[in-house]
Image (cartoon, rainbow, N blue to C red; front, side, top):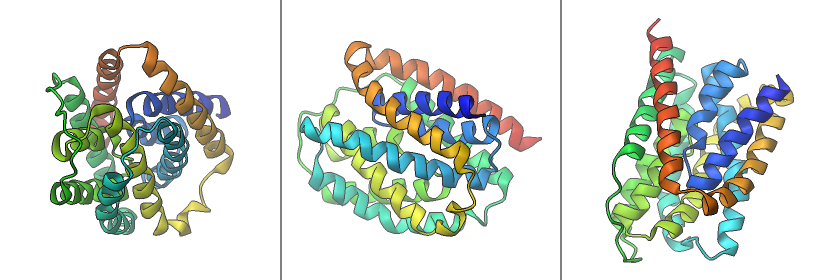
Amino acid sequence: MTILALLAGAVIGLTLGALGGGGSVLAVPALIYLLGFSPVAATTASLVVVAVTSAVALTAHARDGHVGWRTGLLFAAAGTGPALLGGALAARVPDAVLTAGFALVAATAALRMLRPRAATPDSTAVRPARAAAAGAGLGGLTGVLGVGGGFLAVPALVGVVGMRMRAAVGTSLLVITVNALSALALRTGTVGTLDWAVLAPFAGAAVLGAWDGRRLAAKVSADALRRFFALVLLAVAAFMLLDAAL
């Protein structure tokens, strides 16, 4: 079990570090199907992993000057309330509904990654209203499903807010960290019941993987990484939908 936790955590950390998001979408199915967590416990455990891993990865991007603090904090602040509300609602959602909802979000993320990328704007101007609306939606998603939402935050920061790609990747980590911590605030009663003998190595491997993922991104085409991850994600989503239907 510990070996599985280390391997799964490393893959999730690599993805998060390389793409600025997406790895957390694999955390929930890994925790459910590989490590034996219930759907509700898996979403809580995923938030723990996402918060720690994103915070560590954020420090590296901040040192390189690739974090838009003002934009990121505005984006995250708009999502704090929805993240808290989503965290409170998650425990009341039936397991099958939670699994199906997560699978649909994972499939949506995969399809977005497979679409040809439009040319990114060259402007770094902050658009407060759009940032707030996108941030609120992302916060609610994080609270209910236990995902960081980087797979949605990066495109939103580029296409909606108008940030450059490298800054969007770094800024998304700030947004993910704040949203995950907000969602955890209303799940403190369930955190103590998690299997920390499994979760601790999982989270530790994810943190180390995030550092390596940042180096991997400098050596391998980001488009190739994104396509490969999207195909894996589609397969996971199909399996989860089938499981929820049975």
